[in-house]
Length: 261
Ligand SMILES: [Zn+2]
Ligand SMILES: [Zn+2]
Image (cartoon, rainbow, N blue to C red; front, side, top):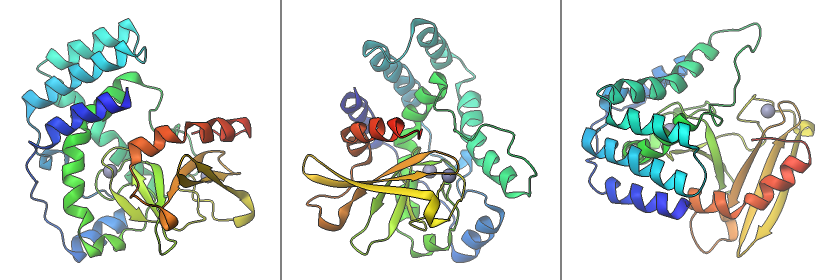
């Protein structure tokens, strides 16, 4: 299923033009201070025909593999045909950014669910369909050295949450955005979901699967976990979608220990 989805996304991604995003150290510093992601929805080079196609094809694949029930499938197809598609996608896109900007303001209690919508099947389809467009945007920011000015655990570009990570040969941990695949450096032993940085309350374990080394970081405060590809002795670079699927046994192990993703 994931390979079919990747193939669909690849076909579109080749056609997406590189966006023009104004970036410099000042802009990144300012956005960082406000915890506000850099990419406005309006700046994404969206081709509506391609987006429509991808929304519907993604729903087809998910349903064929039993990952989308009939009711949600019909809903997605309706959204795909609807003139309001752009508005729906815009709301989906902005919801992540706003969550973080609001969270940056001092809050007394954590009222909203921090899980980031993994449970909403419609959001899942939109995320998959938007990936080729957002990934192209991420390419622009990824090349910039001043990306290092970003200090948050949510994505500097789109505001998405990290859903995978990579340990570089220099032993830095880079978080990888679940929406646009941007990678950015973040403290290795700080939980990106609740910012817990107490070493004794981070459980980390290594695993060797197939040909590759991986690591799981689990937080004993919020009980979420993050998987990472350990590139220090790897023969290939991290491939987030492939590695995420290849490490499903680690999810099972983490869940068994009482963590969730
Ligand atoms: Zn992102
Ligand atoms: Zn945590």
